[in-house]
Amino acid sequence: MRASVTAHRDFTISAIDDRLYSAFLEHLGRAIYTGIHEPGHPTADKNGMRGDVAQLVRELRIPYVRYPGGNFVSAYNWEDGVGPVEQRPTRLDLAWHTSDSNAVGVHEFIAWCESVGTNPMLAINLGSRGLDEARNFVEYVNGPTGSYWGDLRKKNGHADPFNVKLWCLGNEMDGPWQVGHKTAEEYGRLANETAKTLRAFDKSLELVVCGSSNSDMPTYPDWERTVLEHTYDSVDYISLHMYFANRQNHTQNYLALNHKLDRYIGTIASTIDFVKAKKRSKKQVTISFDEWNVWYHSNAADRAVLDGNSGWPHAPRLLEDAYNFEDVLQVGCILNTFIRRSDVVRIACIAQLVNVIAPIMTEPGGPAWKQTIYFPYYFASVFGRGTALNLGVDSPGYDADVADNVPYLDISGVHDEAGKTISFFAVNRHDSEALDLSIDLKGFGNARVIDHQVITHPNLKIANTLNDQNAVGPKPGSGMAVDGSALTGKLAPHSYQMIRVQLS
Ligand code: AHR
Image (tube, rainbow, N blue to C red):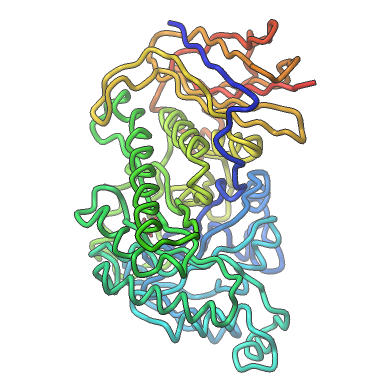
């Protein structure tokens, strides 16, 4: 089977916003407690944060981490997480039927962000609470000393404003499961008034308004239209979420799901344009895809806690999907879609980062390790910075549930002009045939292959577990070479590949 690709130096999609490789941490299960935070762990620092986890996070070079939820945020009192730790209340978390000691709050989270080289993206509770608490929270985090909230922050150990610029106006407010769920009209008005108020405090804040929880919601895409009609001129981004599952155990259908993702992004990009035209606005709202990942492996195991049959446990095992090799291919395709849509998707957050549907797993008192999906995320985050190329792709395809003629080759390319490199991220979706790949590098001059990494495995369902932490991982590839202006080589069946060329 053959696939040919044309990459032209001048045919580009967009400069990629580095925030496309962001992540998410929620007070849910063991994401925070025994995830990033475990006083008493042999690697814990003076703040009780796990050093082994911090190291794996640092390697990913994550630009922003969204916090503290998720569904959790819609009944969260941020005040519970500030002040002396021993005086903080334990609260019931209504979203996940657990309890939270509040040992980690906004101070501890921001200090952790600094220690791992990332930035906070904070979410505001617009479910059980409203405008006044939103305003107080932002003033607490960013306000000057000499004012009530700034002085309280100083008393709690941090005189300087944290200067957090990126804020989410609630979470999944279209979802009936959400505490304080609202209609699009109700939410649109509240979000707009909140945005106006926060901007009266600081015009330079960047604000994310909630879009639909997924593209199967009955209110989609009218929700986005209505919410944007209320908020267009006071927000910067609209958030989208999507989770991927192989419930039918049908790999070809599963690996086609990024076509649904692509349509979802296209529909919301058009909705943004519609509202922009209607408002005669010069402003360009873009997309914050602030929750995405594979999520289904753990569904059955989670029922007991979510149904309330386990009482109110603190940091139980929840949403602990053990990712397999098939999920590497899926995550590779998802990230390719974000790169190809980087003109409208400016922020994206893998959900989540540690233990809860996450690339990093931990054992309390024990090791931390990389799940299979860590690797495609790592390659995209570290090497996918620069300008997304508008590749011309000619590949045979197959018909799937969500789309016809899904190409066996899924590929994106990123040109780093400063580093003089191009990085290609490719997935061969075919289960038994290799792809003879030829990429014509037009207008780039001389090139040579400097790195080629391959992830493949004969067993689609194999996972990296506590007892077998390295079952799946990248290995150096071979046989990719540049001859004249053509980069050629073979992509093994069911494989993820990263190929980087150096330009002269
Ligand atoms: O990431 C898990 C949950 O998925 C989040 O809390 C919620 O926003 C979404 O439904």
